[in-house]
Image (cartoon, rainbow over all chains, first blue to last red):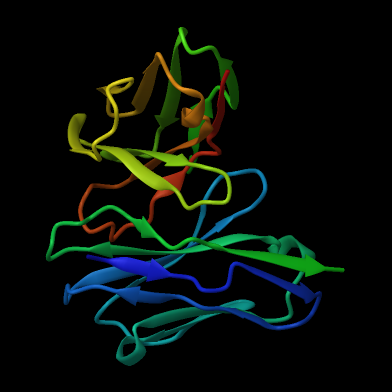
Length: 116
Length: 115
């Protein structure tokens, strides 16, 4: 069965610090998709990134970067020079194809608090 | 328009009430989803509609009844709920159902309290 683990329940940093959110996943599929979503206090989930299992290139988008390593089944998310507006709950999620589990399976989330 | 709109934003209902949650998108997406999120927990999938047909029901109790009247609208009819059903109900849409290889757009949710 697929599983997504976000071991960090809550992280608190001071503005301008870099912070990495960890995500480890389990799947038996060879084709799968990994996602990161941000959930601010307002409630909606905001899509950040999707990565398929055949694309291990790291990605950078502004202050955000993602490190996908199939060898360790990890898809970590780094925020550089954090800002107060980054405060939110961040979810890592997995979608499989081979086993038909197509909808998102979410990790338990990491609450990030960025202090001014 | 890249929005998923959910109404109402807040709902308080008694255990004998019947109410409905509404979700609307105008992005031409053909897959729509209902998720339930309890406090400090991740969202849990409830239902998936693909091309207006129910595709996935995650063994949700019958007191929750989904409906997809057209490709832009998704309803969740509620009847005889229990206090433990209090949660944030999130609607999402994506271009199609499948391996979720297109990002899902989420609404802001309806915060439901059952008293």
